Amino acid sequence: MTTFKLTITYEAAALGFESLTVSSLYNGASCNFDGCTGFEGVISALVNGISSSTSQAEVTGASVELMSIAFTVLDTPGVYAEAITLLVDDFVNVGTLTYEQNLIGQMNGDSDGPTYAAPLTVLSPVVVGAMAYVQEAELFNTAYLSGEPVTTR
Image 1 (tube, rainbow, N blue to C red):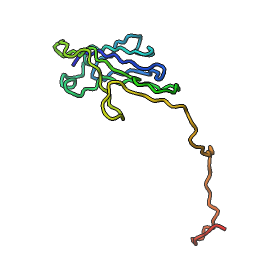
Image 2: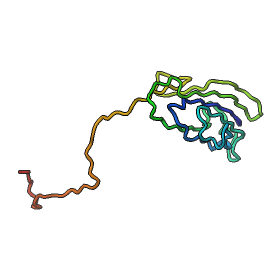
Image 3: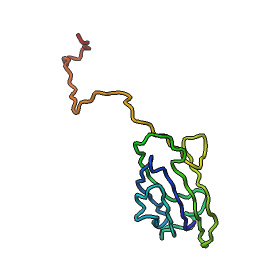
Image 4: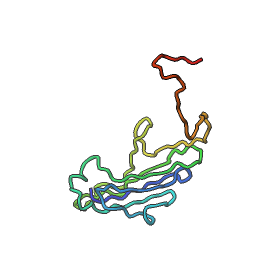
């Protein structure tokens, strides 16, 4: 696969888009906004061509890394059934033939199996414990250094 176009939708009330990084196997991405940063709710990325140092074998197969996308979870409590979805608009092979279009992307997480819309539950912050902390601590031994066992009094 040499060219692909993906559309990622996300719940902007719960997630803040941080970055989109294309695999080093491919050339950089063109996005629906400048620099692939900060477009609220929808990311549409087109990657056209493989890197000059990439062989055809590296971009052929059932498991080829395409890109990674980072989000920040916002402090907006709620249950979001479709926090992230993925649509594969086009996959184009080395012969410039479109061999897949309009596929719903599968996501694997900690749910009961693969899903086509990643759910997210954001809870309100709660205090779960308190710990004492000193910036600098000093440990010292007050026992006589005689070699004999010492117990505290």
